[in-house]
Length: 155
Image 1 (cartoon, rainbow, N blue to C red):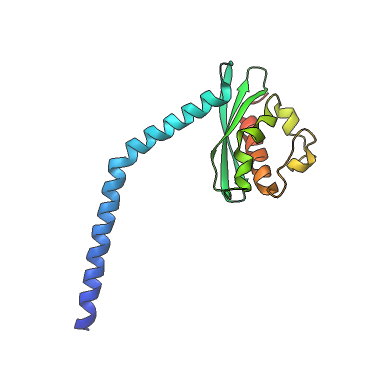
Image 2 (cartoon, helix red, strand yellow):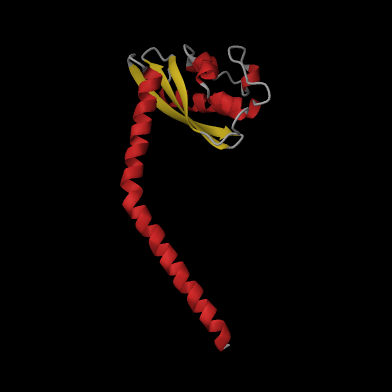
């Protein structure tokens, strides 16, 4: 029994030291991380709105690699002024093509009505938009995230 007590104590002390170190690191960096996140959101808002009047809304949906988050600029008439992907874990290469500006520009000028037809639950069913061949799940992730954003701020 005495031989088992020493490893238990050593492992407990290691865990306590590691936990304290992680807690201290978190306490020291939480404000800096929040500031960077706020700057990232402001930059995304500016990117999707440009010089137009309106607002920016975030949308989230499931994609191939997990949750995908977009920032959508919406002008005062309820039309999309721009879309940018702010967070995605999709596959680099093929899946990440759905986050490229060249692909996202197809959403410009669309309204919530253009995206929320009940018959169009899949990007392939929407005649106004193209999916990326071989990355349909990622394309749908962007599509549904934009729908989510528009439901918060579109007309």
